[in-house]
Image (cartoon, rainbow, N blue to C red):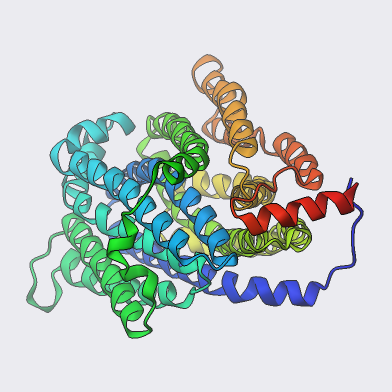
Length: 465
């Protein structure tokens, strides 16, 4: 094991905060917007909440199919940023963008053209299906815009420009909230479109997000976004290297996405009260993930930049400590969530049985998520440093051999109470965390893609031995 060196925690917190705070605020804004959506839609009834929540699970499946390319692209862009390789950044962004937009267009087409088929996968409740079809048929037009903004944000974060995505999120959430108020309830002379109004508002807010990012990048002369000719110049060696790193991440995200789809199908074939509670829980879960995403982005950018620049020892020390910093912060968030669960759930439209289920979901998740976020941060760190295999294989194996087995047995074999079934979603986290920690301290996850990084790794290993 590598001997621990003295580390300047103040400097670490400062480096992390520069990236983590804007990203966390951006995600918090997005989650707040989702909560406002939920509050407005909840006035229409629990079936409406459940329907929109299940449509969100289809969006999450799309996320799983394109996030591998975002993760792989960020790996290359952050390491090239550390090595000051501008052409590398351009090529990585262009290839990433091509891949993610292909996924977005396919999912958008499915949502618009076969919405009934999509909703049937997630629930057998006719009222939920009918409402969901009316919503997803419109919101499918937002998918390409949302994915485009994710790609642009990945480029900006990888090059340490984290404020522009934050400003875009502020504009997007403000647009979404205002247009929801106008279109759901028919204010300012507009027709009252109900759940369809919420979908139109989502499309408009996604468009605003893209426009603000593009305008801000132009105003600040951020050149990488507009190097259109360079974006699509790839040679065989680069394609082989890029997909060699991306495909394991993509396989992870797709297979985990399929596993999560199975979980959501099980959770979606419950009572209307349980479906509504899960939909509200997913919104609240976004609060926790929003904070986590800040640390994950900071770890990925800082570690990837240091590895690419050949500062291997600093990358190693940073990675270990960011994991613990993330978990400590998430613990504080969870404690606040426990304290505020009663007014929060009622504010979001739950009452009676649905409230009791929602409260149980939060308690179970709160216990598990501190470890869960530690696992996610470690896996994202490995990827940024060039190791796209280890965390991927581990997560897939545990998902299919442990989580899904326990979930399906609990629900269909033993007919366990709903909250017990839900708890099976997190049954693997502690075991996986212990294994991931061993790998973290081994430093075997440091696998540079730049010449500077490879030289730095040689020096680091020589010092270690």
